[in-house]
Image (cartoon, rainbow, N blue to C red; front, side, top):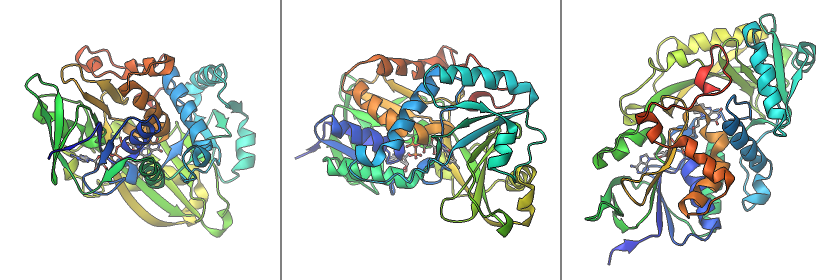
Length: 401
Ligand SMILES: Cc1cc2nc3c(=O)[nH]c(=O)nc-3n(C[C@H](O)[C@H](O)[C@H](O)COP(=O)(O)OP(=O)(O)OC[C@H]3O[C@@H](n4cnc5c(N)ncnc54)[C@H](O)[C@@H]3O)c2cc1C
């Protein structure tokens, strides 16, 4: 007899795990979470994990704010599991040309009750005396933000999902979505056999383009390699520091909680065409030439004391990036029964709890104001050349903010 499921969620990253969990919370019936390798095999395995609300687009700020609240309540909300969230605080630093934008973004956030304030540069210097602020003209601070561990969070969400009855199948690539004679979803074909279902949720992240090709659909999701450099802080600078979002030099850094390490990643969109792959399966942990050296220089510029620090690791992960750096969250009208939540670019981790909550409602046909706002992320925006744009924009960071 053919196995059946009410809903099959494909992809065991933070997005798929969160959606499966929230579906189970809403008693959606038999939910199967299918992952081709291990949980957090893709972007969620390598993310640097920054959790903040600083977005120029009001909806992203609102989603990030709702998600931040869920990270604060994570353990109570999700069965006692730990996401690795460390609310160590978050600074955003801007240069002269972006002072006005920072003020307006901060004002917009404060009007929606986000806990953020413009802060004096002296205050930043007092908290992190080792920072070089010579090219910084203004700063804002979010005391409730910080970072978490994306792989730990993914596993925590999946464990909670399993507690609530979700069946998780690892090492089980979905090879095909089967359609019936009306073109409606009828099931999935996996390495280990078939499952009949009327609802599939595609959460395959950077694999989005490839995964859906056999249905004649095209997702504009480009797999892009993202690099991280880790430096051990010297004895003169052992204490942890808050997350630093550096919009002057387009990078972000944070310290680890239990080691004297500072991690830095790139947020300059100009690199992305260079680091793009044709197919996410080409990703083998490769490092593109020169980028980690450039990251090192950016880190030394911001923290000159790290000249004395040792590089302890260089690694890379993979993002699924869309032309406007925003996700595709949709119900695909031309393939009834197929939903997607892919292309989260550089911000899927921080959004994962709220996206799981909203997407589960969307799939189950429940509606409210916030679920309705997900329409912004519809797939058709690319065909209609109606990309998501922010009313406010930083001079260089562009869509990443
Ligand atoms: C270096 C780096 C730094 C980052 N920093 C941040 C940050 O600071 N803050 C933030 O919010 N975000 C950050 N991100 C982005 C964030 O990690 C991603 O947006 C998020 O993890 C996306 O999750 P996902 O579940 O959509 O995709 P993924 O985690 O990529 O999961 C997709 C899963 O689908 C599986 N899959 C693919 N094809 C199939 C198939 N056919 N069958 C079954 N399974 C399949 C894959 O194996 C994979 O496990 C960063 C990412 C990287 C790489």
